[in-house]
Image (cartoon, rainbow, N blue to C red; front, side):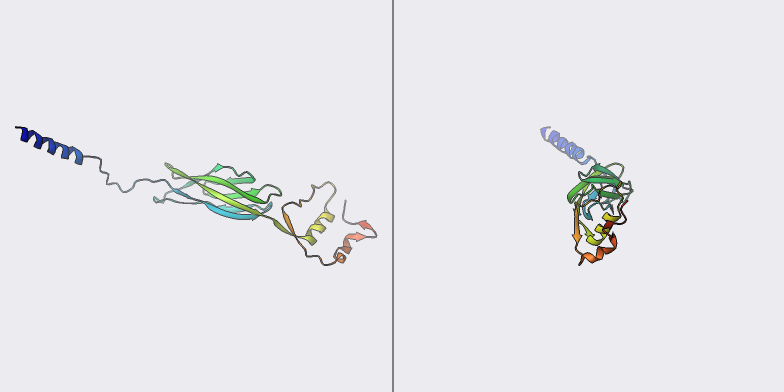
Length: 169
């Protein structure tokens, strides 16, 4: 009798062990994978880009801003397109984070931004300063690298007439 009870218990145990959850559905949803990226721009120069992600289900992905940059502004559209604008005269590194969702799961990525000096023609900068009205905002000089494209002061003779500055209101 004892031998028979052990045999029954073993058979029942196998039966219960084999009746666990078995899912043959190959369409299991997984979280999309946000792909972090790097971009470069110049001082006060907006840059546009496209956020990206990978999703094995290949469904519609929705992007959103997760963390603001500290040295500029960014707008992120739901399709992943974005525009980043560094703050005035800023040079250095910045970043923002984004989230991508497939409607059920989401993941987070980041965009690292390098803001380089804006290369400006010295000739153009001097002429802009002379043409600026007295009511205008001061011309930015920080965050710029001046290209020395003037070889002689004679290049500015047209700006000075009879000892007076011309073009200044």
